[in-house]
Length: 352
Ligand code: MRU
Image 1 (tube, helix red, strand yellow):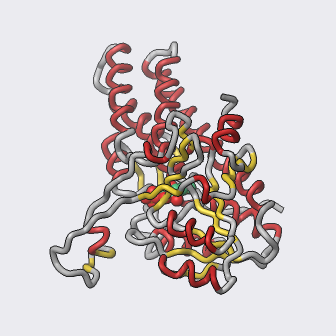
Image 2 (tube, helix red, strand yellow; image 1 turned 60 degrees about the vertical axis):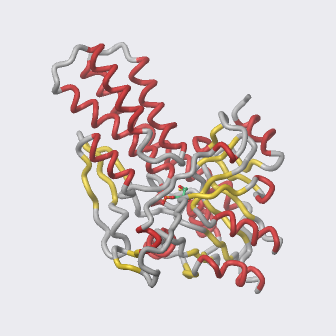
């Protein structure tokens, strides 16, 4: 039985990108239409759209939006192509860690470079490719979900960190795709969701989307994970990824590394669920992954309201951390579950 998720996070509609506004969940579930390249850059940077695969698609849509704008400027084909590629490169800088953004924008740059068409034709090709990437994302996530479901024990309690769900992708999700596929086979499984400070993607988004799909979920704060592991209440951990190096080291939302260490200590399997597009074979290890530094306000405030922090206190706010490959039991991809030695299994998956 296939699990039907109701969520479609981002889609191309005629001449604009329609996306769920993730900044207002769970208070509101509303869509925004992004109609220019600049707006898309800001939507990615300000996390109206977030989650590695979703921002990849957003970046691909951003290139179409820029193309539509430049079509109005009366440029020659050559000028149009040059300007569009420059702006596509710029779109890649909207967030630094999730490599899916660079991957998807590069797919659009390939379309531009390979096109033999006039400006109108290039735009049509970019739209077709954007929609293809959207559809593929859902199909890939379903495959990840089905492979992952095979390693979920009966009646399992699955801990996850951040949101690697339908709302972090076009639909279905990676880590929560595993949950959805497992739930379709065994509706006695449940999820423990880490709150995920500072931006609370777990509290706000993971609980929201699982509740929307009728999957049991319990919210805990980030520091509670080892307590519940020690009590034998967690059977496995599944999280998403923003970038995986060629040796399997994995960047994901800040706090993931702590969960992985706790899981290792308690002998609990720790899985990453991610499409192959999240694997960056150009970098040898996690040391090379750029880590986004976000605003201090995210730590001192929640929803614009100050938390009880000393006014003017020193703050540091890296958005991601890197979990060393040795803590990872498996990387669940659309081509199956990659196992250690990751240098070998990753290079085989890429036919290197
Ligand atoms: O800062 P965010 O909310 O974009 O971070 C999201 C994550 O860290 C997710 O776990 C990751 O992108 C995987 S999404 C399938």
